[in-house]
Image (cartoon, rainbow, N blue to C red; front, side, top):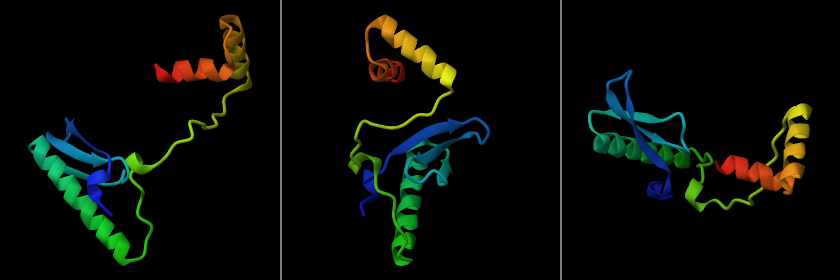
Length: 107
């Protein structure tokens, strides 16, 4: 598996006073470094090591987000009062409840 296909992010950690490298597919992993480049290099190396270890132990390796396909559907449970309010707003706007929810989520 190519660890270059995973979703990486580098952000500043005020608490640690360093940059932290993260990988969305491996939320428990992080790497601290003085520079953003170092944090990215570190977390990519760490992900590669973890993948090697998982493969050696016949564990399932997470699929990169970039290679997953998404149906565009997901179920969200809300309070009945919220459902009623959204249905009313959708009716007043002349759109379906799905369309209204989609527009609100896109914001």
